[in-house]
Length: 239
Image (cartoon, rainbow, N blue to C red):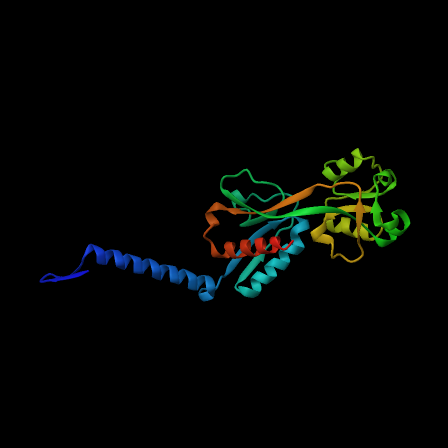
């Protein structure tokens, strides 16, 4: 493997190959040591999320920061979808699919929708906490938006005419349901632990919603982004 001559020591081709293997192994071990905490993660990551995702995403970020206290986060909560391709955010959590080839998209979870109402509304209007098809015309509903909500359209087609409140603000819809304004539709996994709301059985079928985590393709090797994406996906598997 090594040849000595008057001009010095020379590695044979087989020796050079072994050196290359050893160097690759060392680089791999260094990467493992970094991933296991040898190099602390630091910096700020901007995450775009709709209001419905804000609370669960914050829970995930809290776990990430306990492990990596050098990280900090910015999370604008907005109805518009941040353009990940233009780097308006490093990570996006959304229900809309991307069309950009520069964005990597991973499925987070599939959310089942359900009807919810306050105990007082259930007691007075919906015995046995059940929404029947025959009840739709007489029940008050709280919807996302009076003009564009697919849920409103579905309810209208089933005979609903009493829309007590239409707002894109999910916090307002949850509060309105708690106050007994009517029946609202939420992702079951996101509000089933909310105090003051009862999940209704129903004869009406509701669609499910797929959620995705998106990030720029150039950030695939960014360890900070990878740590957050991995934590989000792990949380999504438990929903």
